[in-house]
Length: 97
Image 1 (tube, rainbow, N blue to C red):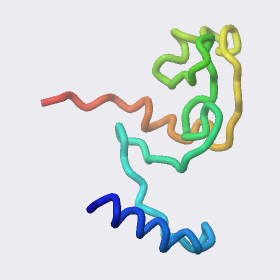
Image 2 (cartoon, rainbow, N blue to C red):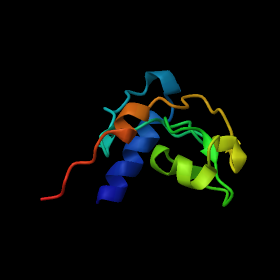
Image 3 (cartoon, one colour):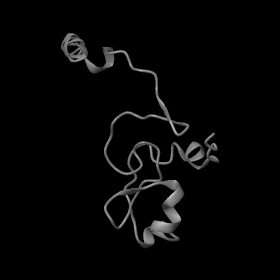
Image 4 (cartoon, rainbow, N blue to C red):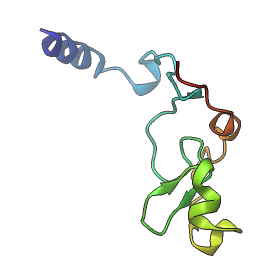
């Protein structure tokens, strides 16, 4: 049932231009706002570096994976949005109850 309703919703909105489709409220994941789908390291607010293993590196692992300066072992991609989530990504983590 859910898949039929979802398919109907997608089909009914597919004729609208992207700007006319109402945006969903941003979801909070680990305290940081969810960003729209994008390409490149940093496009969702991360530091913007791709590590030696080919994966994007987060703020918490930047020094360990990339070194100082980060360009030592990583490539800076400078995707739009780079660094936008720095404060919330580095905020102290809440303890689990």
